Picture: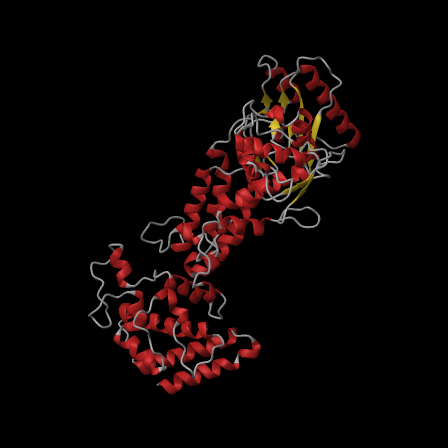
Length: 530
């Protein structure tokens, strides 16, 4: 990579070399003399070791250099000339803002994964596992270094959403039974647990910010500290990448506290370094009178706090100033570096993003979803997915299909009288009502799908794994409805109870070893109800 020559003629400056495994990146001044010197060194290396350099696989990338010297530099090296963006260690490098086309390889990789999977043989829960384990996993590397543009996330989400609901790379609103924002919520908050790429990207970039402050052994972090102020991330480093990191600085300051040493890397107003609250929140009136709120602790104490404020203060600001000056009188800086602490970091200072992701996704989300109990049941994964749709009243009953204009009529096919809603189909239709009565259930008149787990339990049915027993019954009723609707089958109450008995026997293998006898008890209950 050729860089613009500096104004000084200091030819003793070193040539920067970045090497990882067999990938080598050389940075030198864009002068013919420097390029000729590099070529001689490479030729001498080849002669001494017998290792030949393949210049045809090498590239030269000019960066702000004189166009008149460029042809001779390229001819001297004998390699091809290229421009930005360049790929190094799998990451796109550019001196300008990356275009969406720079991320096409990652989108194409997603398409290759989707094309290789036999999605038609997978149930939705199997597709969910592949989405979280594979489609999201191959993006983690780039998201640790680069902020993905919203357009790239939208393209990948389009493919993930289509794969989940249809098994293809695309889907329409008619295929998506639940809103994508809900799908990306935690299971405990009523979602499916598919990762939110935008939030995950933020969490991984926060690890990068954390490394700047605590990375003692990181050469990259040491280089950053030489060129920028860690308190504000202002300095010589410019560009879209650094702007994205600066935008995350307030969030990073909110999840960390600081033990002040020299005060160089700590923001006076925004970091939490005195007690458990940042000074801008603790003294809001005084902070509103501050000329510059981006000063570090060291700069503020050195220049004097009063010199940072406007000349005239309100009475409230003056009171807060007196309190703050009294607190600062006990502050003494040292020669040690500031130390960052975070509840999301381990004893070695490494930031872990799992809990941080859960915190960010939990903001504003409803907790304690009724479906949360069914995720912990012993039902097969595809039945757990059915329970998730059931609690949200999104199974493909006629009422939902008519609401989306897929069917013209929502009348129940089994009784021919009432609209086929989720609750009617599974609890109040004539056959469903007789099914639950045979098992000894008393269905409340105000029964709702979201309260299915709170269905009053008959005394002869044990409390242990009661949620799994409820799913056995609802799953069998749903399969009976589909058999009648699509295959013109006829199933009596006795046949349905026999089907429940077969399901209970099969599901008993999924119970803990100490509870597998419960499956025999369920089979006896279904036999007695016949």
